[in-house]
Image (cartoon, rainbow, N blue to C red):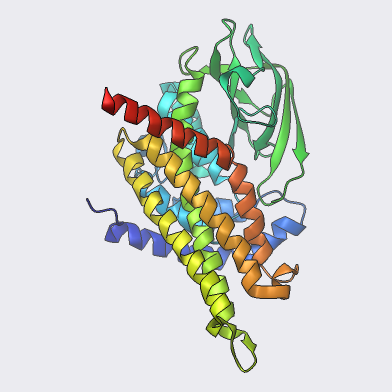
Length: 374
């Protein structure tokens, strides 16, 4: 089994990296962090023009029609530069929901807009703190109208539509497409550790909805899409971890103390070695997840949880120790270390917390062992 990317996929990586190095330097990330915009609109338009947004969207729906492996390659590069764009909400989640459960008319309406960057999507399931379970969903649809509150919703203030998990008239969890620019919708921006990835509280008051998928299948569909998104987001985290490691390594080679580079001191060597091991293990697990995602393998639930746990741990570990290697300067606003620390902690809570994915990994592996024994 070859778990490496092909030459064509590596060429795609190089092309996207060149584009992002020019269009998304740290100053662009800081402009969003310190400015009034919630995401980089010009960068998002450039990604759409490059075909990045439509990488895994079929050509008949306005995409490029490459596949999930290519989207994994793109996700890693976006993570390296901390791209302040709503790709996760629109492409990893909304587009995948439509591809998996959307009707032909829904796909034809929304997928071309997502691929071109004309529309932004969001996924609204969480309703507060704690692990989200079917019984924790209180938002309800009655007579084709949705009422309830969702928070936090990633990119909720900028999205044109949301895919919302809510209870139907039979009290089952179903999915609905809701226009966020129509009546019955109130949005409020929330403060978070990473302002370059906006979060929102969305209140629905008899907002018109359109069903997505079969009634009562909402939780089953959401679980499948979250597994897909977990692999893609793990690649973003992997890219961030690798870049944090590179920043620490470069600083350790350049910074002099007592007449020698600080990288020559054993304590710094140990920190860098631990970072390298963490990032390398995450890469192995991410590649396994990419294989399972692209091939539709039955191992995807376990592979997705494994990649998610490993990449979350690696990004948090590398971003934290990057600050430590930089010493007192690493804690200052002037250095870029805190940008990676912010993003690592923000992504650690996206799609469910680390503890949630650890629990799911244990549950899924235990279930697999029971089935194998039977």
